[in-house]
Length: 275
Length: 266
Image 1: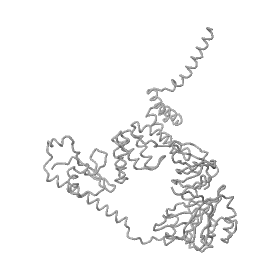
Image 2 (image 1 turned 120 degrees about the vertical axis):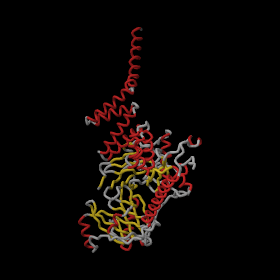
Image 3 (image 1 turned 180 degrees about the vertical axis):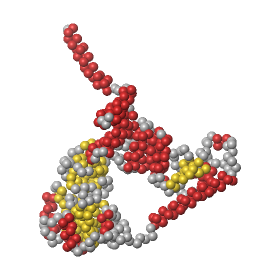
Image 4 (image 1 turned 45 degrees about the vertical axis):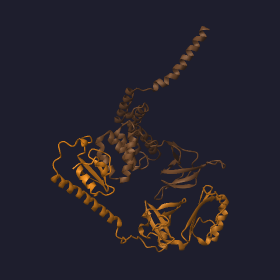
């Protein structure tokens, strides 16, 4: 364990403050600060001991002492006004440390935001994680219908935007899915064709299996589980031959007819079927 | 002298009878338990769920698995029709009764527990445990096998192995120890300072820390003396409602159901 330090004070450089949000909850003063380099700090301090310090900070920022929040225009990427569940919301998208912002589109509010900080009327939302391709913060505030109409009008915001679908990079996930489906189909086809062929060529099952095999009777068929799909039943010999030929993918599982346990094909065909 | 001795004898008889009576009256035979279950079922048919639950509970407490199943099933059904704190309390009690029934070879109870874990109803969503419960149900009733095959499609190969091992553990009598935690109402160490249901995610401010559902944070116990060394509690928020919050305090067996009728805001 590292040495425990008792923090005595923390000084915020007003010249680097992009957003300052505050809230009094009981005896606690909650602070959220977004700096101009897109880093943040948040802390809870005693309201009684820090009221004057907060007022001084607001004065330095050129705000009235009675203010509870400060947002510098330079750190704002844009704003989105949305209506949902009969409520009006203002999303203020903040700049990111590099170009890691999601697109400022009409669907911004539908992104999977997480709450990073909360006061009674404002939430700071975070999208993505630091170091991710897209990572940023956004301030969400509930506003009245009148405020929403006034703000949209005064800010000359574009009215009723509709997101147009962006051209995507070739979707790797769909490609992988198609590849997986193809592999799955091939695997099943190989199993079926091989099974049919072997049944045609192979002599009928001997009436009396060798004494060594009678102790553990082989199940008549096996089901395969691969890529969240069940196929079968396939004859035991087919499974054994496919396994010997190494044609099963790494994560194929196998279950004997009537059984409930899914196991590796190699374990399922034990003892090995004799030709 | 003779009278005094008689009085003492009478007194002792009364005391002994009094002590023995409750134990005797509480002892219910298997036959009586079965009668209670039948009585409860009749109440259900007469649409008297409170009376039915009373009978089922008595049967369950007498060690009757059918009574436990019926009580659990009824509570689960009733929880669907209520919300908030009532729902949590009914779910918690219902699942505990079903757990008793499931561990006494009741296949349908195992299915109910599997469904609860599949959908995260009253317990955390856990497909591995859901599969293990379904596999246990199939062991008691092989006709349920198609349900198991449906569930296996949702799992990855690694999870399937894990789920099968868990089912094997159930099969050898190693049941989960803390399947459903009991729920305790109110706790003086916690104070709800605000509930916000207006956003996309409900949030609660508890002991000056903000939680969304699923968040785990360290909070300082309310009213803890300043010199107390162990006043920090690691708390996980499980559910936020209009006027209540369901919490789990790490290291403590029971869940905490805190309520407030004043602070809710939409």
